[in-house]
Length: 587
Ligand SMILES: [Fe+2]
Image (cartoon, rainbow, N blue to C red; front, side, top):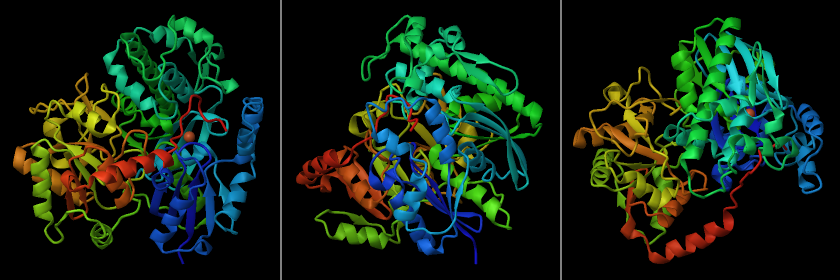
């Protein structure tokens, strides 16, 4: 019988679970999608339940639970920090208990078998290497902090993976990035994307200021000048010295963004790219491979990934699509498989992330049929559905698009997406006003049919996960997806991996000559991406999205009874306690 491993990542940022059967990934999901608490860090009970159901297993069929961290080692770092915040928040001391993972695995999951603890950065490294398809590669992981490591260097060869050097807390590129994110008035552990999006609007006027906070050292090492940082006190990220160095007070959240903030964001991006490129070059001297694997939260900076790929010594790049801590569950499971099983891990490149739950037409019909909603049933007539949706988008409508298994990782890739016409000059503001309510400066991302990518984007290889940016070179004018520096964060769509989404893109292409759609995640601001048809209906009702496609069912906004919106707004207001951070979660 195949060996079953449950990989679990929790108690930090985004909790997640995955199931590996005989070294193959069968299912993976983040807890927030079920609990509806954005960035939910708690033991991922619902995600685990889903993984077991998907594999048709009970917890007694699991041979090993792989946990993505060494709790005792992490406690050592927390104690070194001097228990900051203890007097304010005794709950944080509870959360430090190193017995907590095992206790919860035993008591909540009812699991009595072995638990394999995998070091945080080793889990990140494995989440990239074992899913890269490379036979050998250099590996770089960069995040805020794991137990002690904040950056690690490694090599993979066939089935073996080793880390040979690490940078230790408090020296952390990730924490530098989070510190400036916080200084610019955005949320730590989430607002970093916004800083990246803001950067192209600014000039790199503060590069020297930021270089002073981070000294490069020999080998893989670098050092933060802790005079500029206050995160060791767990109260705020930056110190008065950093405010003095910029000569401007920190921006208050939700206040006006000025050129100064854009210049700081741009300078930060430059300094990040400098240090990543330097350390990538160092890594190549130690591991002179053509292949580089990246993971850790900093690897979600797709602009820096592009820079490292374009200017660095590695020809081929693989970035784990769930490069953040959610992906730690995948790496922990892969490492546990390596330690406990004779059999190898299959070395195909991860080509899609549709690892979450799917809902059949029958299930969706059962839900819709119990409501007074008017809906159109396209079962057995998918082509007609795609043509109808393409026509609606072409006429300026915004579509909620729900099909197949939910994506794992932070990006919506055509399974739980909001779609619109990228050529429409008003579409960015329109979607922001209708549903996303996010900062106007952030562009939306495009999805393009893989076979047409070269006609519109300066992209030489498929980019199925939106993890690299590139220049737009399209003859079409697409203001809704083109950033101020003429770049875009492209998703290429392949008909084998994503057939229904590819078919919709093709229908839109045939109708309009544009093989591209604007694709943004299917959620309201501060909410997790929708998971089930009911979540999708709720988001559809409360937002101003024009139409909803649930598998083969088509619903127009006019079909929604008025009182639904009021009722759902009350329910969501009381059940959506989004978690926000001013300080990186060290506990
Ligand atoms: Fe991490």
